[in-house]
Image (cartoon, rainbow, N blue to C red; front, side):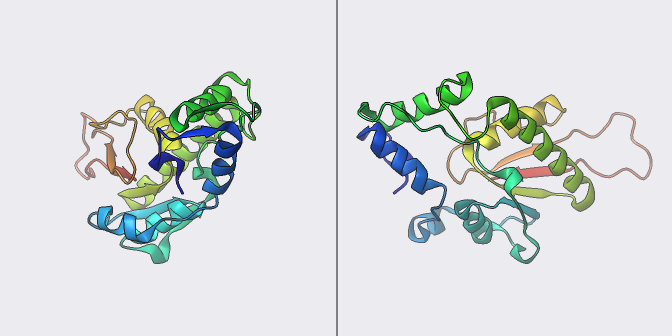
Length: 194
């Protein structure tokens, strides 16, 4: 079960921690995802190495045979709540986990500083792949994608959406073409994230 499908269900912190442990290892519910997948994406595919991102890439990417897979694109880790008896709606427990990561008050395997460094490294890879392959499709995870989107905007990329991003939502980023265009110019490149 995905904790995100039941945001208002009341749970204990112990139950939430168990769901979070299972979530990173979980794949997709094909019956639920296939009708929502939309049209295939014709772009160079890059994916997180976690099962749900990989399965999404295979569901949507037109060229899964050349799928680039890396742990660099994993979700930002979520801390586990130390107060096991705490009982709140799932969405509230998840906010506590994220705030714990943000403030450093809940131990997490990757600090905020480390996550930001990884986001910058991932964005470097994406920009390099866009330069090499043209359009790129990134299959990753919600909070990580939001952070990558912020980094892309800092680097001059544009998108009609700022986030937060919804499940299976496609967000396109493009870098505007330079004003002084040489005669052998290429059109602006796109980066599609899902």
